[in-house]
Amino acid sequence: MTDHTNFGWLLLIVGLVITGVGLVWILAPSIPWLGRLPGDICIERENFRFYFPLVTCLLLSLALSLVLWIIRLFRG
Image (cartoon, rainbow, N blue to C red):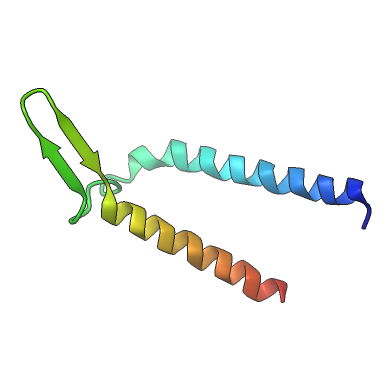
């Protein structure tokens, strides 16, 4: 393949990733449990709030790893 073809595929993949992020951004508020799972760290004080969605991050990382593993499996 030529360099132009590789660059075209790269642009296509980047566009699909941006589309996927946009869909998640739109659909995330309709998933009420996302970000409120047991194990997510939330510390609230009078003038301070700290929130770290630890379990949510782990689940999203697991899902992304699974998707990438399946893509690699079918690519050969």
